[in-house]
Image (tube, helix red, strand yellow):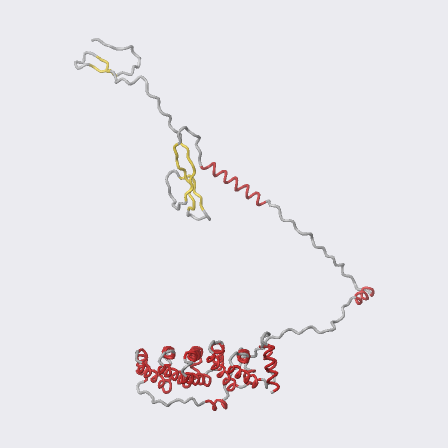
Length: 422
């Protein structure tokens, strides 16, 4: 058996196998590889850079580098992680640790510099310049007596006194004077058989577009106010709104019936209408400006305002006459307000006006001064007449001077001098 072998012990990297008849051993050569391999391309080194992202997730990939917490809570405010970037040529590996260390060193320097900042220079210390206390002697007492200031020759000017407001006193209309103006020309209406059904029916009539139906509904409210006041209390504000809407109606017949209805409400409800004086009085005064060419409407408004004066509290009545009436542009409205302020002064009386206290006295005197200087002759006449009646009281001069404005004082003093000569 022939054997083609190499020397024993050599590792040639070949495999041996027998022939099919098991008589000959032959060599199986592996596939030959190329003698030289091509040069491998250099593997690029990787460098990393720090990226700041505002992410609120708690778990990221294995690239998570460091998490920064804010205020000791578990919510991550900023997450700093490494993002790989391939750079050809090979550079030194850089991580976020270097940048973080620089930031920490800057913070340490800043805290050290702020902790050792120099304080601002302080001023010089104050020393006690007074000599120590000692027992007074005759010489020191004599020297102090020489420099004792003399008392002032003129008394100190008195401080400006304010308007004294006494305790609030309820202003009441004198009953003796009330009987003189009590005639308001009211008709005696028949009571209703079904007042509750009539109340709901009157609202249906007022919603109707026909003017005669509206007048019928207002007549029902007048009868309810005269004979069934307890039924009006449940829907008082609804009834008041409906009546005030008809006061502004352009048809004079409907507006006249609405003004007449307000007069019935003033006379029969009395104190219950105090809370509605501001709205109703303003509506009546503004109706005077709208009905300047219709004399009968102005007369009806005057009677309704008179009913308001006779049956309601004087304080809200004074307020609405001054705020809405005297400050209006229309001369007719100012004249109507001045006329009813004159009537209010007669009903209350000069003594009660000056002793009422609160804001009533101050408001009334200021309104009378404005009336005396008004551009309308009729308004001036009412204002001067009221001043003439009140000027007879003892404490009028003192309270009046506190109310008068400095710019109006010369003109009003001339008026008061003319009243004194009369």
